[in-house]
Amino acid sequence: MQRRQKFITPGYYKSVLALCEGTESFWANNSMESDSAEQEAALKARDIQSAALDKIFIQYTAGEPIDVLIPSLEKLIDNYENYQRALEIQEQLPNISPLAIDDWPGQYEECVQVISLCILLHRIDLLQRFVALLDNAGYAGEDTLYEDLLRKVLPGRNDLDEWYHDIYTPLIRAIYAPTKEEASALLKLYCDQWYSAFEDKQTNWHDTHLDIDGDEGSYYGYWAFEAAAIAFLYDIDDSEVDHMVYPKDLVAYARNFSSSPNSAKTGRIESGQPCPKAGYWFTPAQANSRRAFKQGEIMPAFDGSRWGATLWYWSGEDDA
Image 1 (cartoon, helix red, strand yellow):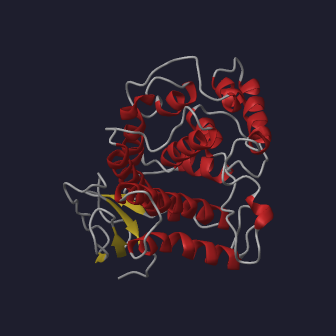
Image 2 (cartoon, one colour):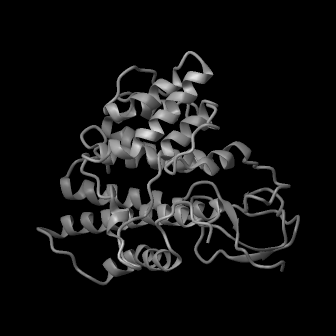
Image 3 (cartoon, one colour):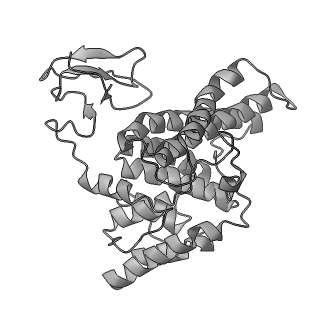
């Protein structure tokens, strides 16, 4: 295991991953103390969504290949939508946001981390679904960093000069720096200050590495994914950034990404394209979809899927 942060061990990873993957089935068979059935459903949905986010973090921290994150990200966006629907019913507020990004820096950070993962993994279809949950709640056109992350990849975004939380000021200034050297310096400054900036922000992740006890704990990794997304989107030189919270290999992945049907290195292919490698593939767009394809066989599409576009993923098996 080529871990990306030093606090994790193979045994810890295995234990925490199992907890993350078992959360949904656990709540399907157990009750949660609450004031109403609607509140219970919303609390369960939030816990399932949080576990899905934790899974992505622990997978990346443990050193899993970047492509492994893609199905986990798809499941995460599905869970955000489930949580929003449950919260809407509980609060009786149409289009309520699943994250209060204006009031809580920790929830804002969660928001930009998810946005950034969608961008870095080139899943704009998932980005559109996630951002709709916040835009529909009234957050469009309210925060500079939120809009600057989106306006390079989504049409019709806003240009403004105000933001919710001062923590992000160096990163925002990096976007608008007058020179490339200053942009790089501000990116580095942001990463250097990122962890300490959240010390008093009532997050549930700060300093969790200190509480690891053998194979038990609530540490999943510390990652400023938004810094990586800004470096990628605005072509900022990150060669001098050498901080453990900066996911430099994700930036390299984003910059070197190829959607060519003749390239199987990313382990995914769009429907309608010829299969680049004979073997077993699967798609989240349909249940029990795993099947063998011959090289050159056209990958099928499934219309009307809640996952949007049909994307096929290499299962890791030998050639069929």
